[in-house]
Image 1 (tube, rainbow over the protein chains, first blue to last red):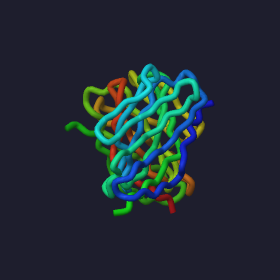
Image 2: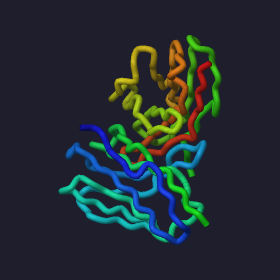
Image 3: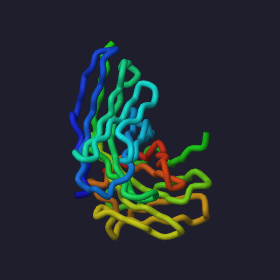
Length: 112
Length: 111
C-alpha cells in the first residue's frame, strides 16, 4: 500500500512538445506529492509539489494535475526543452518529516 | 543557498569491510534521512532520524546499518560488513519538516 507506480519508464519528446508523466498511489493517508528531477550523477532536486486539497498547481512550464478520487497525479512539462532531459521521480509522503516513497522514475529525453 | 553536502563522492571498498558515509545537513533542519539508489533504479528510503534517534526505518536498514549524529552537525551512515549488493548511490537528505533537500550522493562500490 506504500507503493507509488509511475509511468512511462522512458519518454522521448520533440523540443517544444508536451511531456506527460503519470503516477498512481494506493495509500489515502499520503498528503504531499512532490516531483523530483535528477540529472546523471546528481541528487534528486525538488521541481514542484502539490497537496491533495488542490487539483492543479503550475510553476512556469511545469504543472501538476491531481485527481484525488482516482488517486492519480501527473506532471506536465510544456514547451519541453533539451535541458529538461533528466530522470523524473514522483513521490508521496504521509506527514511532514516522514519518509518519501518514490515512484520508479521516468527517463525523459527531449530531442532538439 | 544552503545545501546538503556529502563525502566522499565515491568510495570503493572490499566486501566485508566497514564504510562510513558522511553528510552535513542544512543547519536549521530537524529531520535527516538516508536513501539509496541502485544504478538505474528508484530511490529507496533507508532511515529517518529526528531528535537524536531513529524515527523510521525500512526493511533494507538491517543490523549491518547504523546512523549517528556525533557532533550536532554531521550525520553518518555506517555499513558494518559491506556486501556486493550494497553497491549503490547513497543520498542524505534533510528537511525542516517540509521540502526535502538531497545531497549530491556518495557512490559506493563494493568489490
